Image (cartoon, rainbow, N blue to C red; front, top):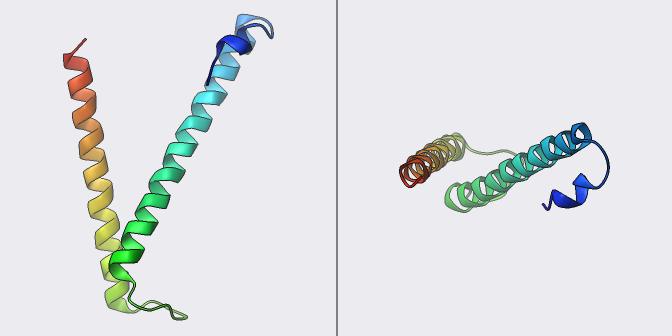
Length: 88
C-alpha cells in the first residue's frame, strides 16, 4: 500500500492510524494466505475420500501435516529475519 496518499488526508495522527490499519490488513491477508496454503496442502495429502466425517487416520494426518507446515513456516521466517538483520 502507498501511504503517501494517506498523508494528504490530514494530520499525522490520521496518517499513523491509516498506517496501522493498513498493516493490520496486510497481516490478516498473510494469515489467510497461510491458511489457504495449509488447507490445500494437507487436504491433498491426507483426505482420501470426501464423506460426512473424516476418519481418525485422516484427522491424525491433517493434524500432523498442519503442525509440520506451521513449524517449517516459523523456522523459515525466523531464518529470514536473522539474515535480514545480519545484512543491515
